[in-house]
Image 1 (spheres, one colour):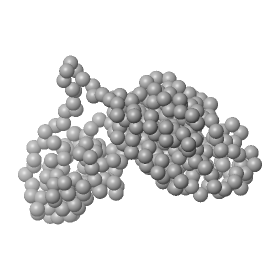
Image 2 (cartoon, rainbow, N blue to C red):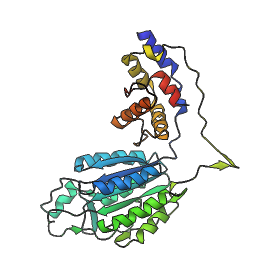
Image 3 (cartoon, rainbow, N blue to C red):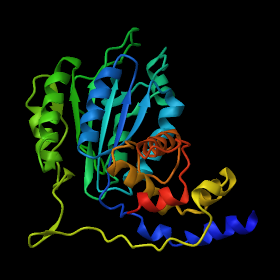
Image 4 (cartoon, rainbow, N blue to C red):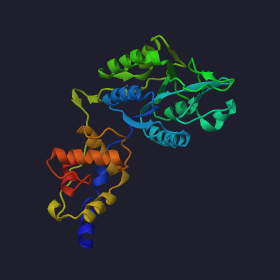
Length: 318
């Protein structure tokens, strides 16, 4: 048994060389409460149509949202461009805007400092991408009253150094804003500054700043002459090892654990290319990746186990 596991691992020790480059990633964060779920779903669908990897938070409390924002900042630093969509109540206090996560009960204005997240924190995280990014926020209604000195935000905040532009919209403006995004998704090239300017022409929206440089959410493939320049994927020779039919779950799990993070990213990217995966290409095999693997296996009329076999790995990489 151990010898067979070692043989499988050795056979794929170079598999990580085929990992896709991450410099061209577009990463999106979509955050919403219960009332904004449908709007967030629609916005996320358009971002995914443009090829963005999306990280979603639904009805997250303050602790959960802060943790997710930290993860998004790391992913943004490993991407070309970003876009954040927020559909939560946003309030202002002493000239600053704060996002209220689910369950943020406020009894006094200073509760904001422990129970909310500054809107600029999302803008700073978005700006970590190589080209930059932006924040689009729908200011959701708040069911309970607000303490004195607090009010729902009605305009985008002033520009801040090291932060990306912020577009603020009322719920009534969401439909036309989504139409702008949907139209853009049909184009070959989507430049974020132009997209924001088009959204800013909708009644009920305000924009904090213009993009200082071009940021492309979607761009044509780089070409050399008339031929598209494609990433070269090494051709791997299938190692001499037991057939898939004789591989135990233990062996398959050992094979998966032997893959580098970059190799796992390649798996996710190839699953995205085949239309099975919509999540982040982050090298972490969570529930979305398992479901995508199962869908890929089902498309091959094979048992949908959620764990790739040696043959499936090779086929997925070609």
